[in-house]
Image (cartoon, rainbow, N blue to C red):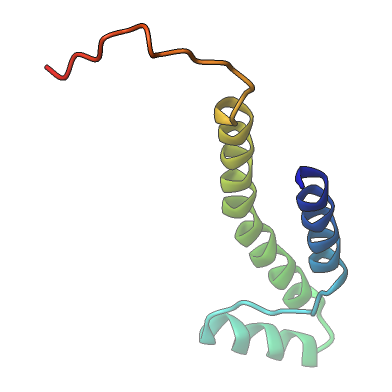
Length: 91
């Protein structure tokens, strides 16, 4: 069962990576400036788009890194706990 979940996760991850669309994440003022600069022949608008997308990716990568470290540290290990011999103190 674990192998099936693993491969399902891998296939889903690869599927998400293979489906992409071009996005432009800008405020109204930045969009206006970028469109005007592209119309005038400048390439600064494209650089602005790339910079915004780069800054957008940083928080997602940080959260993914923390999630991966959390998963590696706290994942369930095959430990045989025999607690029947110990008293439980609820104080």
